[in-house]
Length: 222
Image (cartoon, rainbow, N blue to C red; front, side, top):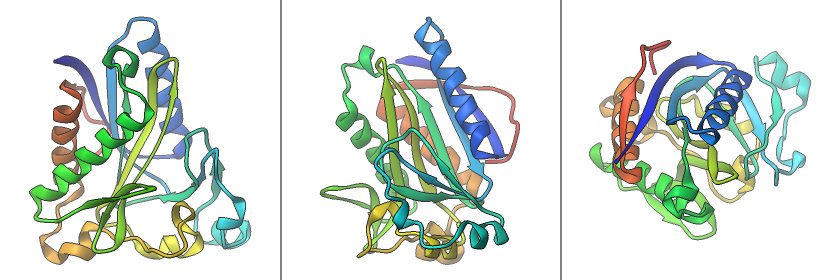
């Protein structure tokens, strides 16, 4: 079992999350420890390296009026939304040491989400050709990663209590024939809090990647 640093960053701008990942990945490449960040992002739409700008349906002005913007990023995948009520996890891991390729890494992330969902009695599933985790016919968690020199960045986003109306401004993940959901929509009053969701998901990720997570002092509440 490998030791990894766990940091709870709270609500941060997307660029702050990128900076954290890049610093953690650079440290890992020169012999540092693996790390995992848990956070929420301020409202932002991110467009991955394979993204189609036409999948952003609203104008920049309309998004700005709602307090959001579009940011191009270096993860795989298409466009998605990050914002309050959504649990984002960035595992910075040495996949080369694990002999784990991109597909296996994505499946491990999905598996951790599926395990966490089962703790709340939600039956999640994978859908062939559509990365992420689905429940009741809609996507509840998105997965998008980048791997360079065997080190992973980016990760997953689980909708806990996200305002799903944010997704109306995009074609989420470029998939036009399916919607998105959240644990709040699926479970109502039985839905976990963000802290409960984070604790379950972190535990599942620890199991999936054989990590012993050592937590730093909290910077936020996620």
